[in-house]
Length: 534
Image: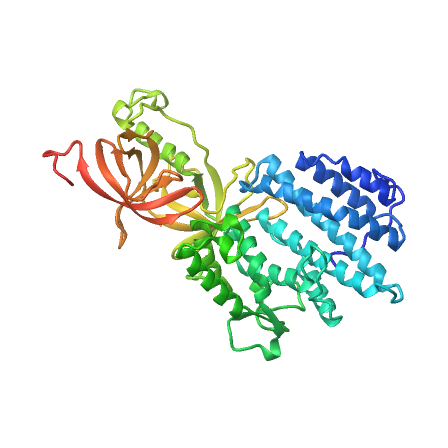
């Protein structure tokens, strides 16, 4: 069954405005756009009612033309509310995500209704132009619905890819796939943007990377070309399963009548990255001005690989036995977890560990601090990572790039013997039941809490909680710092009980939205016997 099967008329529904363009225009003027959730809810409710009223085609068309700019404005206002969203999201973020998807879904239903009404009419003056315009707007709304699902860490609902593939085949057969329509890109461009977004692996993106990926798509998606698979050129590209309900990332080659040729796109992206790396501004290259900085360069390099060869798994994953895994998320929380363990270990046997203050265990005199532990189920495992799932009750707000401490939890074992290991979230998914899946990469089997005080000239910064990652295999000693602390070549004091050191920050080995993993050079120890450089 089609995902966008038109709903049956409902005589009981009443619109908040009379079904006349003038009345709608006045109603739209008074929408509270300063409150994105309120404006979005009013628009979604109005579109829901409009899609279930019996109206003549001309009236419906005139009303939707008025709705279009208001819907785009409301959607643009809702997206920033989800910028810092993780999983499970906070209440307002969850409301914004649900509302954005609903708004896009009702918009899709509205434009599909117009198209079906047009096809039932005899061809007349302006018929082809209107059909091309509403096809382009429907494809753009389907694209935005798909993006809203990814933005909320969800997966597209069943049938959504089928709708997009079917619409593209229809407009391609009618010769309307490249027809411009005012402020809406041609249907073929919106379709290619969606295919490329799916290939960019959205579950592995944080929200800033997602936004910058859309900037890249706005400028480069037109360079990707669609060809019949039977005459696919000998260039980089991807099979498109256009007769199914799957994305190009899910294609297995058995049902792929189309070929997405990304050769020209990848060459243009490669040239743009070189120009930005050598100092040219994004505006001069023709990109969005906000694409200045390291994020766009590192993301562009990753997109180049994904749009050239696709995502490939480095190691095979194996099903796990459902072991329970304890998880603590965030650099500060992990530091408190490990610091508390040290306090309890050092507390005298006849004292309550929760009330003990160990003076030589922290440079700022802090006592035991609280942290939140969540319990997850191990789903599969590999040489470098694992997949976890849970349905947390609390709004953990976990994000791609968050640091995790984890250890197995054996049933009935009050205090597991296992050490806490260090990991990082690489991908996140959440379904409509709020069941969350995490893809985790292991970073180190051992971590220790330390304090770092940056030295900026003659000024000392505030002590920052950090994690010491001991050397292993070919890796040197490293530090995992909370974001915004690292500066290359900066000196800092390191307090690692019971000793204090001076060091210089070295190379940044990894950067995420929540931490920097760096190496360092240790050059003095305050408690060393001779005071010489270490």
